[in-house]
Image (cartoon, rainbow, N blue to C red; front, side, top):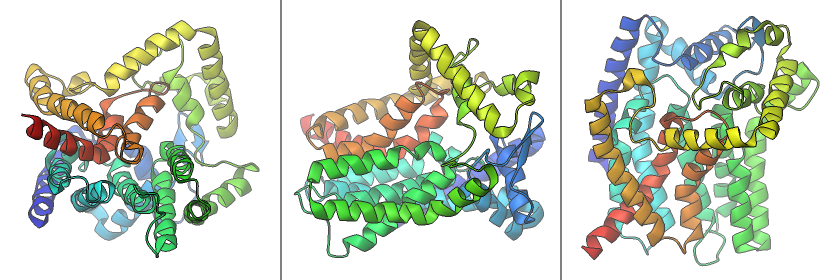
Length: 402
């Protein structure tokens, strides 16, 4: 495991230097525009200024949740002028840390019934799968979100036992830690918010024990501890409960509008009718417009969902900038066998709802979410990391049958 973790770190350090060089050559902070928003918010936090950012002439005070900007603010304070490179190197460490996290998660899910080789294969994929390894170098929230998600899933795996027991004697501490990790994950990536109660519901309905309900309430307490300050802040600013961010309306309209094609194009925010609105009104109006479009054009929404599904499961990059015949071929050679083994792993564990929820659940969750919102392999990559456990199980099954 130490060798795999060290190898993962080395690969990510190389990727960090490569992306830093490419970004500087391009004259940008990173290769994706979202980085600019996170970076500005991080600067505001570091300077103790108002937590707001200007987007198309509208000042947003809840555009992004503060988890990832807080991480970047710490990197700016530590590394100064070299903050972008410093952040990439810290993210390389976080990416390498995912290797033992995946191994521990898969071992906890499989207990004594899955061979150790399944967890080793999963850890190897977490170390060297090209897309996931490269993503650690990008200044995007997924780099911090994934280790938090894995910690949360590992906690659920320990609490949600295969044999009907409700976890070890120190289960309440595990439950509290699981809740803290879950809350932190949502603070970094708010689209994860619905996954947490969904997994808790699956756990409660499966075990149906009073102690399980107590532990679930402890998990919720952990979430509450992390997220309550953000809720209180938003209540004071907006006079109403804002659970995550005031960007869902724009994101929804991005995926459901007359010119939508499955990819993201936020230029509609520059239109005068939207620029004239305040942050909350803009969020509300865009959400209403998106829902109205969906109700009036169900056929168009269905066709868009097919396109978005194709983008999510694409074995090669969606953006033309990152595509070529050789990149597509290399990507397919890596990705398609993973898909095949994932399918075999799901079939092998088809009677184990706990394994399917904890390992394949994130992949399915983000897939369904991005049938509505815009879609890309970018949203699949972090969700694949826990699913590597099922890929490892698929490999074991294939070797046993061959």
